[in-house]
Image 1 (cartoon, rainbow, N blue to C red):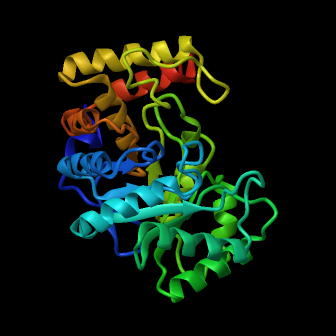
Image 2: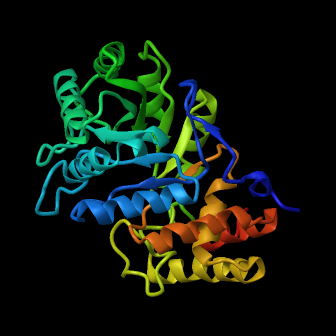
Image 3: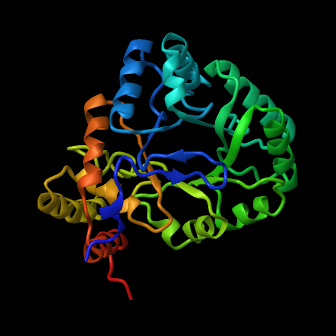
Length: 315
């Protein structure tokens, strides 16, 4: 029996909570966007739009390790939008703030206000559709965060707000103080990063009616590259990744698609309706992601991927 991937198409629209905004089932992320020339950057954006992406997700910290430094990805996006302003009308534009090395995190009201205003300036836009707290700041009370977000919304600088890398408990605490509803949460979620399935994050998203934006849906590239990178402290061992890739490859052979498309489809199959954020900056690879819409995973196959990731059978 196939599960809900069979009903997901490029025309499907997923609500961003109660914001009134809706996005396509696949989004595009700009973690590695900075450092390109504007023409190349525009080609990447157009490739994502070609496969129906409407959500474009960046952050002020993206580009920090490039010569342009902090804000590099937003600055580059701003150059593209100035050269091709019609692109902005086709985007649900999302960015994030709250990381500022070497602190590392600051969600104080004064800093969040400053960070949002600088993001607006770098991108050359009047309003950000979805502004997200990038990582939780343990030294700021959620009531202060909520107040800052409300003032930004009242000033017309953001349309909606969300969080990234929050735990379920941190999300609940912030929601309890929000004068308007949060609309999204962005966890790392992939066949190699399965913690949101059991740590309460996806359940909390469904409880609060939040959209789930899944970053690194190919496991930091380990499920998309012909020769995946070596394991790191935040990435599973090569043995675990190989087991998952073997199951994905088997499904891909049956479906007639790239294995990366199966990984995207696996993420989208969860009932919280996660939106995988494509991280590739290669236009051909971006277009390849559209094959995810043709993959219909059976319930048995979905659990086979999960068990491969766990390294043991489910109880």
